[in-house]
Length: 124
Length: 321
Ligand SMILES: Cc1cc2nc3c(=O)[nH]c(=O)nc-3n(C[C@H](O)[C@H](O)[C@H](O)COP(=O)(O)OP(=O)(O)OC[C@H]3O[C@@H](n4cnc5c(N)ncnc54)[C@H](O)[C@@H]3O)c2cc1C
Image (cartoon, each protein chain N blue to C red):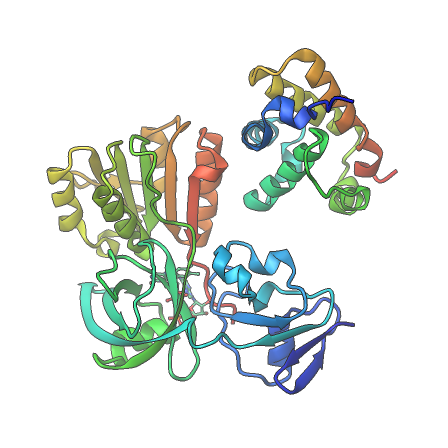
């Protein structure tokens, strides 16, 4: 059987992830619908988390766990994080990838993987 | 609960206690300052057991390999045997010169007994004979084994007060390091560079600037030095003369308050920088000094397009007690 390149490899590996992390983080920080959730958050730590998350949704090497996702967002759920915010984050991620020239079917794949974390993020 | 072993002693850790807190609680004397994993003063060596990644973040690979870790952010998940750093990491040094750069800033020159590989802009912990440790940025191109520091006098500051008022040429101290990533990396000689700092945040920038020029950097280099008022500026003549010999270098002193002076901007340093350079995609930035200003600038430069990996920042965190 032939090895299928992972989405991570198709997107361009670590360099592409780094760029996508920066660009999507810039978008969420300036989007009125979600930016308040990032107030007072340490930029380096947030970028490290975002990198782990995108590496995971791109199917790259990662040590993502659903439990981390629950614990990491519990305080935000208390502050009102809900489905609409998850929608926004997935939308902004798609926009970022499309600006980076990623093909639509790949973006759909990434969105579906991000979607699979929704219940963990929202603590359901 | 995991335990920390220290020589012959064993200390059980309480809850989420760090190795540093456990040692201090048990009366062990360990140097420390920022207690947030930044200044490098509390570095120890693991002899047995696993060090959590967080406690080695930012350390150079050869140190990680030797089990060096920062005790103040080390919360072990299993038993850990720790020890003070060996003699190879703690280098004894002599103060060879104490001069004034301005009424509030001393230039301190220190000669290490053993030379080691240091990049201007990195920082070194200076440990006084009584164990008090504070980090200072390397401002000069390390000439052989001599290191240059700029130390601002802090009201009631223990280390800065000592260096300003009591220390003498010939006094011996211990040095630990270097640490930090705020240094020039050759290989992208045409990239525009932004060097911005407040107070003695100029120290690492002065090191980075001269290192970049020595390495033949060709892209524009813009230096912004912020101070509350005129008295906080120093090295003005040296910086101005560099801009005359290197036309790709600019120097802008920024004062928070006061009447306009030619060649000087009045206002908040972030506003001045972003007013002049609203788009920073492709730039590399070096930031140092006041922690709040560094944090806020970092975010603003990022939003203006600078890549997160191209913003190198040294926040001069205060001691934690
Ligand atoms: C990575 C790093 C690099 C550094 N590089 C330099 C450098 O190149 N030059 C330099 O001068 N300093 C630098 N510092 C700061 C330095 O390490 C000391 O914190 C500083 O000299 C004060 O130490 P002290 O013992 O004199 O004061 P302390 O005895 O620790 O403090 C006395 C009191 O003043 C407060 N305080 C301390 N600093 C400040 C401040 N800046 N503003 C307001 N209150 C304060 C303390 O919280 C305390 O209450 C750096 C710090 C870090 C973490």
